[in-house]
Length: 172
Image 1 (cartoon, rainbow, N blue to C red):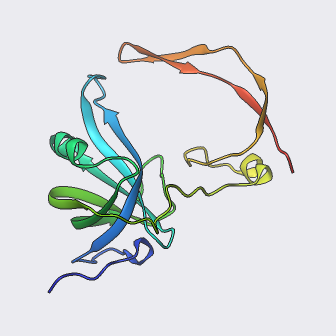
Image 2: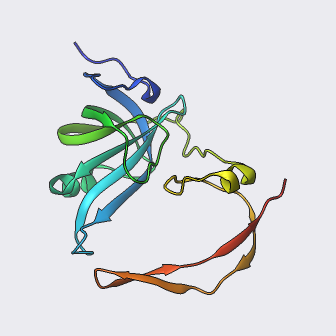
Image 3: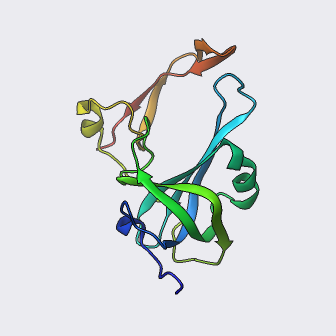
């Protein structure tokens, strides 16, 4: 029997026969620790028509497959995924679970104008200032009132990262 469409919010551990209709709202590859020019994994953030978001990722040996199969902002029906607990160091969604993409995972393109191009969880400035969690990815809308000079931050694997400090002003 063909799976029915599963909303992202309904995905839980142990759920099988999942079929999602989603838009890829963010796609990035993570480099190999000692080889910065080599991809180690691929991560995508998926958004459904009910504004549910879930993270999906694939390991190194599958990166070329999904890099050629998946495009940012395109909409897909996704099948054959594994559900796992979402506890990476930097969570991209609030979902308790994430999807592991495997060899049998299928991304089938389809037209879905009912799925928005993006969806942001905007936090008020006070919530950000009072937070003690630094590993959470957040979206902020503010006016840049001051910008520091771009500085070398630290060296990792022969690559120097850059750091740009900014000061934002809340309009509220």
